[in-house]
Length: 182
Image 1 (cartoon, rainbow, N blue to C red):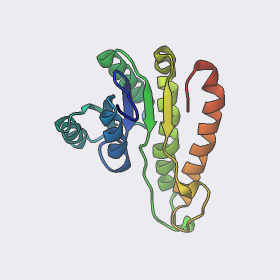
Image 2 (cartoon, helix red, strand yellow; image 1 turned 90 degrees about the vertical axis):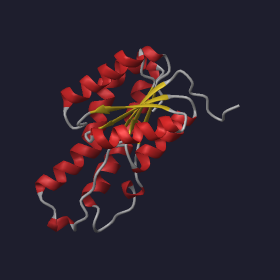
Image 3 (cartoon, one colour; image 1 turned 180 degrees about the horizontal axis):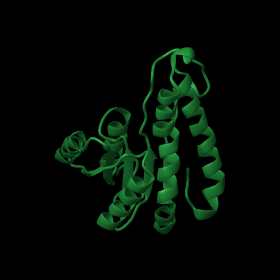
């Protein structure tokens, strides 16, 4: 018996083609879920999906710039059409610019915010109806210790992860009525 049985469930992991996202995707496929690896780099996503499938998982790549609202909506729709459902959304896509705050440009600041927090908002907004249809949707938002601890080289990253913590709390209270756990 598996500790977690996700057989028949469908998940999307943003930034799922490497690092923490790939590890999360591996855990989900090991538990029986079908996982869509959503990222901009299709070649790396396809290689990651092949690796998961070689180890007995069920995964596929889906190209998506998670900072683009229409691309996110299209990605959610394509996964739901392909798999017939969406049960789990993992907002893992993220980036950082390691500079002291006074050295950050506004463009670098905005890039981190768009990738780390705006993308989670876009993915959640686009996935809400599908998660409601699943009957018991789940959203996992990747945070960081830098949401509570400061770092001289992580101002933009820490701010985005602090926002992620508050966004997650707000979603949890807003979507409990829809039987979506956040």
